[in-house]
Image 1 (cartoon, rainbow, N blue to C red):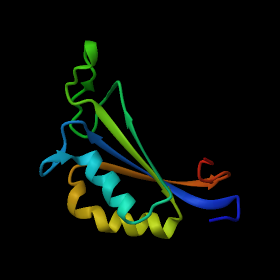
Image 2 (image 1 turned 90 degrees about the vertical axis):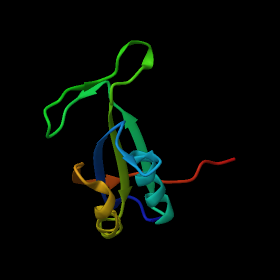
Image 3 (image 1 turned 45 degrees about the vertical axis):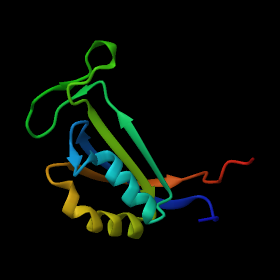
Image 4 (image 1 turned 120 degrees about the horizontal axis):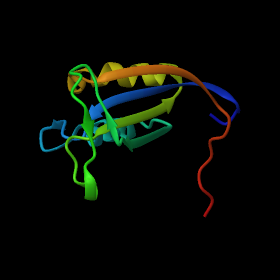
Length: 113
């Protein structure tokens, strides 16, 4: 991954804050599975409002108390690695929305200490 720029895929997984896998949030389980596979990058974003297939609007309420706020997990890596991760996660994704987008990685380097 040292030769920049390189072609990659951005996978977005849309879940609700209350979605769970056993005893932990689903977004956390997705993040952990991506890390176990050594994916190049993962970011979890918490939305202010949104809705999915149910058309039930989910939004953040005042003082940070949530009513199932929307969560987006973004994962970036080479297309073959993203597709392999997606195949590995079909058992936990259930009713999630998943999108894939081609992206071009222009910078990727560890933080210097």
